[in-house]
Amino acid sequence: MEVKKNKTLGERRVRVDFNTTKDDYVGLLKEKSAELINIIDQAANNPRWDDETFGEWKRLKSLAMTSIEEGAMWAVKAATI
Image (cartoon, rainbow, N blue to C red):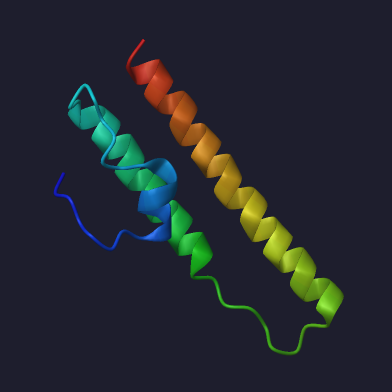
């Protein structure tokens, strides 16, 4: 995988460049996890939401991205056991 200076949020969160084994499967797991985090991060809010709904939307996005980060970590661990 090429090294980019300006990584996306997903690429930073799953550390796509950190692959000590240089395993293509590990790279793929991280790449796809980063892609999904980026898709979730780009979700648009509804300007008509009240503060409570907006806060809940942000919380749910955060939980989803955290779960993907955790899933990527466990998947990499399983792939390199």
